[in-house]
Image 1 (cartoon, rainbow, N blue to C red):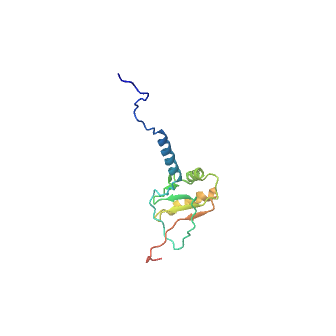
Image 2 (spheres, rainbow, N blue to C red):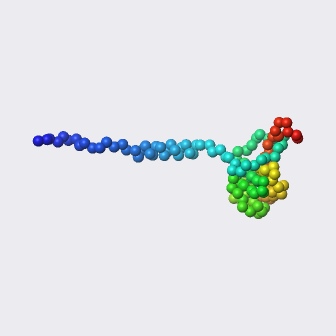
Image 3 (cartoon, rainbow, N blue to C red):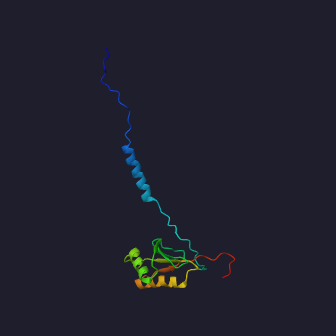
Length: 143
């Protein structure tokens, strides 16, 4: 006759729920602390200028104008190129902060009217800090 001992032979288990919690917490920490690099979704060939200012504001509102005269505010396209639609999009993105710096990145082949329309919309809304993005001329290029 076999006498049973007080121990039961259970299957060995590893409780992974606490490990999943720790991994999700670490994942959330890394996602929140990661620096996201803002890459422009549009390729724009900026006009050249010999004098450039290096003190760029990181919180600047970016308006991009492509070669066809389409507007992009912080990488979101403005569908209607009228001044009123552009003003509405600017108010939606910038809110009431009119002291915020604005960088106008227009392609070198953009029609002049598209750049003037963007500047007009900014002026009507009361933005005062406007910068036009340019690149330095290549060495050996004619001025």
